[in-house]
Amino acid sequence: ISSEVSWAINTEADWIEVTPNAGSSGEESISVSTLPNWSTKTRSALLDIYIGNEIMANILVKQEGVNLYTTKDEDLLFEALGGENKMHLESNISWMVLSKPNWITISPESGNKSTDLSISADNNTESIQRSGVVVIGKEGLSHTASFIVTQDGKYFSLNNESLAIGSTGGYLQVSMETNDEWSVKFSNPINWLSLSDSIGKKSASIRILAEDNPSVNPRS
Image (cartoon, rainbow, N blue to C red):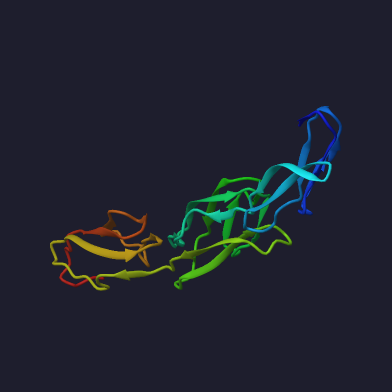
């Protein structure tokens, strides 16, 4: 402030502090500080500069409200086997993960600015889909950011459960529909059958090679 006479500053806003709030002639720098604005709305107020009893100038002070939200509107979906997704959190306050499902891991779990969240889901060993809500906020603050996480359940089916082949042998094929890891083995040691694959992940087809049967008796 540059003035040839004494001056004073007044405001009706109780969330603003001006230091110094008065001065004499000459040049003076003032400091304007504010209390935290825990509302989501921007607030504003005027600083009235007085010379004597007359307002000679105004300074408009604006303070933004809390910004805390995720930039994705849709739910996060996970495969039954688990995996990782990303979510961007926009924030201008310190925050922490207030609640989440126990099968979800989030990194980082706290911060003080906008960041990308890494969200991981454990393997869902059940056949039932599961879901939950992740809530991010600040202790004592009513405004929060939240999103839903959903994970598929396991499923498994075979195109057939019984196969037959002629006595001269050959290839058989079994197709499976699944979103899980799988393994195949014979219930008893069998030296006339062999598998193209014995372990895998997700839907697949397996070829089974049967050798020639030299006996007149069927075998299984």
